[in-house]
Structure formats: structure tokens, C-alpha cells
Amino acid sequence: NAGVTQTPKFRILKIGQSMTLQCTQDMNHNYMYWYRQDPGMGLKLIYYSVGAGITDKGEVPNGYNVSRSTTEDFPLRLELAAPSQTSVYFCASSQSGTADGYTFGSGTRLTVV
Amino acid sequence: AQTVTQSQPEMSVQEAETVTLSCTYDTSESDYYLFWYKQPPSRQMILVIRQEAYKQQNATENRFSVNFQKAAKSFSLKISDSQLGDAAMYFCAYRRYGNKLVFGAGTILRVKS
Image (cartoon, rainbow over all chains, first blue to last red; front, top):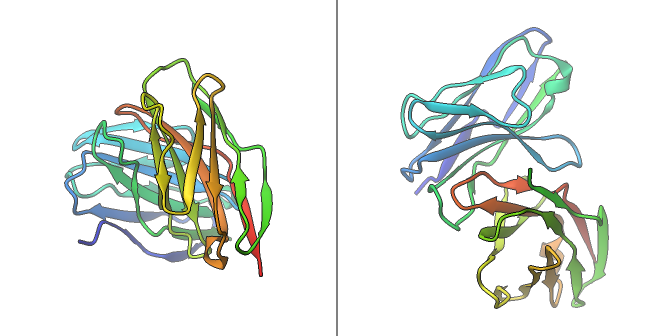
């Protein structure tokens, strides 16, 4: 059982470039989330989805976009990368309304130079 | 909005000793869940322990236990017989039923041999 898979694990972008961080889960979870973690800090919610076709903004959505065309996939798009987007990005999923917390991916370390 | 506060940016413990990490939260809800996550240098987010607010009994998982004080909105993590592998960043998190996790800023735990 793979759980939550994120790709790539590392990436360096130049200012102004765009990229998509991929996230897929095989647990048939309804809820999926994208968080960013800045150095020495906690996780801040970027976007989340409660099911296919439904997405909503979190705490820090500016500069990002998401889509949820299937239950399994929840890609995060960065448009016009900026140094402020240098961070570690985590994708996570959960069953709706359960006490199990999240299942996290292993993270993507993104550096914008 | 719910907030989670971890007042200890960093803690140290001697191997085999006991350490307690603090967490307080702010909510007007009566039914919710609380979690402790461990993030070792590998970056992987690992669920350590969870507590359901309606349960009076404190959760325990092997060497990890919590002191849940609902009226005081306090949720501390006690690690007994600390091991070198316990060294990590620890995050406290709050979740209302069906809703998204809110994380504290984290506490770095260092274990001395």
C-alpha cells in the first residue's frame, strides 16, 4: 500500500518559472491537503479538497493553484515562482470526519533562485 | 479560528530520561481531536498519538502518553525512557470533526547520550 506519493522530492526553480507538484493517494480518501513548511516553522495550509471537483483555499493560497479531477490526484501548480515560495511542500489525505489524522507524503523540497 | 500554541521552541533530554512537551489550543468547540506528530530529519510526518476530546482517559502509546486537560485547553506529550531515535521536531495539532488540521509551530527535541 503506497499511501500518499509526492513527486518530485527536490526541485530548483528559477524566478518566474512554473511547475506542478504531483500528489496521488491510493487509499480512496475524500480529503486531500497541501501544506507548506518554512524552515523551523509549522505547517501552513495552502489548499484543500473535500472530494473530486471541489477545492478551497487555505491560509496561504496566493501564488498557487490546485485541481481535483479524480479522487486519487491533487496536483499543486506554482505560477511565476518567487523566492518566497522556497519551502518544503507536503501533501496529505484523510478520510472525512475521522479521528485518524492525516497520512502525509514524504514532501517536496523546492528552492526558488 | 482555532489556534495551537507550542511555547517551547526547543527542548533537551538525557537518554533514558522523561521529557514533557507543552501544547495549548484555543477553541469554542466541545468535540474535536488532538494529535502529536513527529518529524525526524527525514521530513516524514509520523503520527505519534491522538486524543478524542470527549474521552476523559489520557491516550497512551508505548513510551508516549498525553496529559489532556480539556478545561485548561492543554495537551502535553510525555516521552518516557527517551531514546536517540526520539530526536525530532514534534508538532501538536487540532482537528474538529470533518475539518482540517491546525498545527502548532513545533518543538525541536534533542536527545543527549
